Picture 1 (tube, chains in turn orange, brown):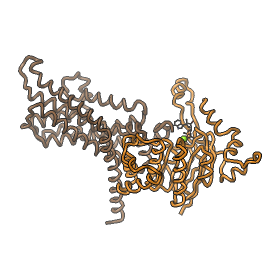
Picture 2 (cartoon, chains in turn cyan, brown):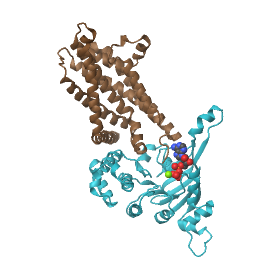
Picture 3 (cartoon, chains in turn green, purple):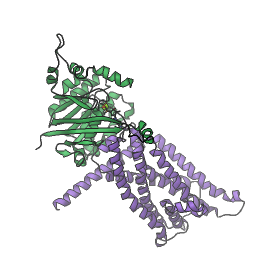
Picture 4 (spheres, rainbow over the protein chains, first blue to last red):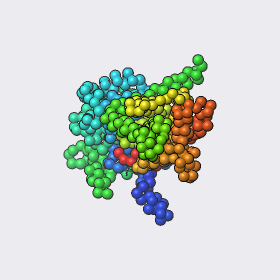
Length: 277
Length: 282
Ligand SMILES: Nc1ncnc2c1ncn2[C@@H]1O[C@H](COP(=O)(O)OP(=O)(O)O)[C@@H](O)[C@H]1O
Ligand SMILES: [Mg+2]
């Protein structure tokens, strides 16, 4: 059996800037484009957890969408457990699921109603959805009474827990976690992280986790890839990456230091720069 | 059973379960948005009543003797059939815009579900919901008017309506492509399509009343035939063989539009995934 869970090979994704699009066409100029992902190659062993670390707008979500069959790459190819994402789309879809930053639910429906819809699409039976959905949500610290009330009344942290339940209910063997803890309060964040660690121990899931939280990547992942402007600029275990940094006075280097060394800026400066644009 | 036969059966069960997901979700949405459902239903009842009262008032308006009962039934068929066809058309054509608005579209598109299954589920709900709503409206109207269906061929009317549903399912599938391709304006475009159908199909008046060019557009609207057929069945008690001229055009339109719609839809889906229009940010 193939031992590679995820194989991304030389993938590039370019978008046409739609605002500039019409004007440029009028003048006969080629349309302006944004290259969100450029020549990315990434491999995750079966059962491995790889962190994709990068500032806002560096192409993390685009890569996740390419793997989830929601975007088609301009070039390169992606395989999930040996199945090509484009040619065997339906098979790949049964193997994966995703948790993204925005919770994305039917706001008026309750968590259970949302889970029923989402997991039935994967062929899971209603009875099992109610049972396991409840189990996962209780484990994540959601009160039982919440399970039957509209999602719009819930905080972002609670909604994110339902998103995690939705992601895991279909028993994916590759799970894509796109900034699962961004914007959560510290307590929810710890609960979500603990849940992910628990899953790693008990299940055979292969995980790609994107984050701009250095500590999170350090704690949760076996290996880390740093992405910047659509390109992967470093890969390795957290220890290996830290080893490339000239030791700052006294302290042990952190992933933050790695990032500064590679890009000449702190992650925060990177994000500020984005905002100014 | 052969291995292949079993595989096909397993597939069918799986697809049936997945299409049930759409039905169940829509039922839940109707329950949760019940306030809006009530508002919309009251609006539809009032609208249908108002139209039907035109029939009742015709003698007064024109100052001449008219067959009010006939006119009332004529208008009633128009308003009810249109209300039913609109529900079927809207439920299908809005399946993309609704999910885009809720923000769930990426999750639905990621799921291992064939677009055909997606359409089946959506359509089952649309037809069931459309019939239920129309019956409620009819029930309310019967309280106000003395409606006699002694002349009617009810079986013929049901056949006409079912065949008509197929054509509107086809139109709905085609229309659902617009919101997929045009995130900002697509939904508005489908409403324009619907408004044009209302104008040319003879919902409240015979198509012959329209200017010549509109009549030639009416030929392509399945609603033209459904309305004509329903009126012949309910007002004149036309037999099923006699209804055939109004049955085969919507049937042909449906049988062509559904597969063509599905093919164009999957092309559009590819394009949208290539250009990144499915969702802009996040
Ligand atoms: N659907 C899209 N259409 C046009 N541009 C996009 C689209 N999705 C992402 N982009 C652009 O691609 C770049 C990378 O975005 P994204 O992958 O969302 O970054 P991240 O998730 O790391 O914050 C950004 O410049 C963004 O504006
Ligand atoms: Mg992102």
